[in-house]
Image 1 (cartoon, rainbow, N blue to C red):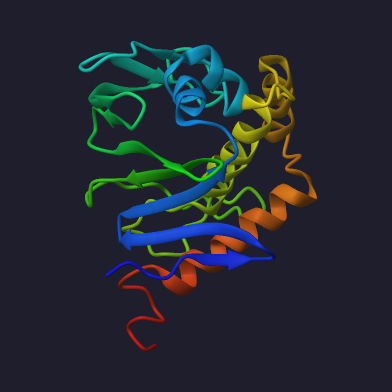
Image 2: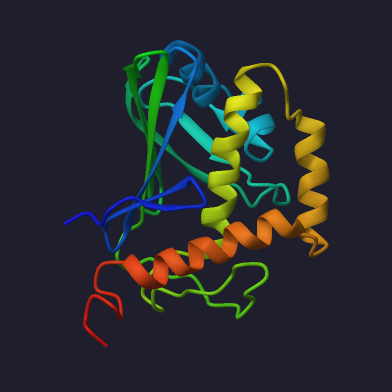
Length: 212
C-alpha cells in the first residue's frame, strides 16, 4: 500500500510504493513533448541533472548515466519501454529502474519518476549524515537521503532548464566539484535532512510501521 505523499514546507517529496520503490511527482507548466525531449536526450540530462550521460533514445537503446563520476564508473542499462511522449523506462543491468511517466494536465504536464531497486541490491552505509550517505530505512534498503535529495534537485532544475533559464552543463560540473569537496550548501543539507526523515518515518516495513 503506497504511503501518502509527504510534503514539507510546501514541497512534495514523494511516496513509497513499497520498500524498494519510490515515486517522485512534479507538475510543470510545459507540454509533455518539451519535458520528453529533456528526459530522452543526453545533452539535456547533462544540464538538468548531472553529467556525463549517453542515451540511445529508442526501445532497446543503451544508456549510461555518469552522475558526475569518473569515466568508466557509469551505470549502464537498456531502455525497456519507450512510448513518446508518455513513458520511458531506463532499466539498469543490475535490475534497478528509473521510469518516467508524463501525463498532460491543464496548463502543462505531471511527471512521475518511479525509482526502484531489486530487493537484493545493497548500498554501504558510509555514516555521513551531511552527505546523506546513511541508510535510515535499514541496511537492506537503497534509500540514501543524499541521492534522493539530488534527484529532487534535478527535477526542480528541470523546470527552469526547459524554460531556458539554466542550469548549463558547465554549472553542473561546478556543482559536482562543490559536492565532491563536501560543500552541499544549506539548501542541500536541509533537503537531505527532509528525505532522511521521510525514509525513517514512512518506508514500508520501517520502525514506525512495525510499531516500535
